[in-house]
Image (tube, rainbow, N blue to C red; front, side):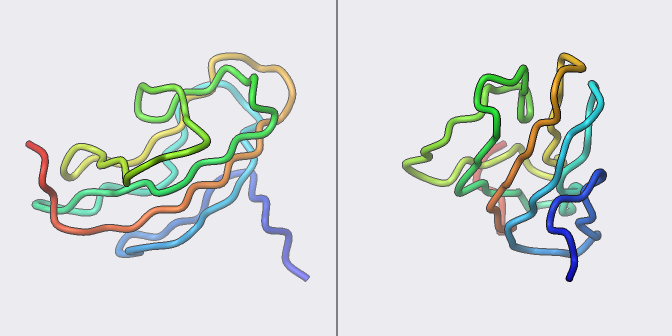
Length: 104
């Protein structure tokens, strides 16, 4: 049986949707989903971080557990998780898809 929590996320170039779940063990930036390419954007539809009080930013924003509409990441930018502290392990699950960008 495969452990669904990975120390380093494994989302390959060209992946266009999914949930991805992983553990953040160290402080700093972690690319969760690579940049999709020119004219494309990543749309986040759900986020879940445990513990929810962790010092965590997703592309510079505090993650919200409930998204009322998909959150569009700037065109051709990766989805990046930033962990500010080196406390306990943070488990993160992100649901996303890739589509044509609407933002500039």
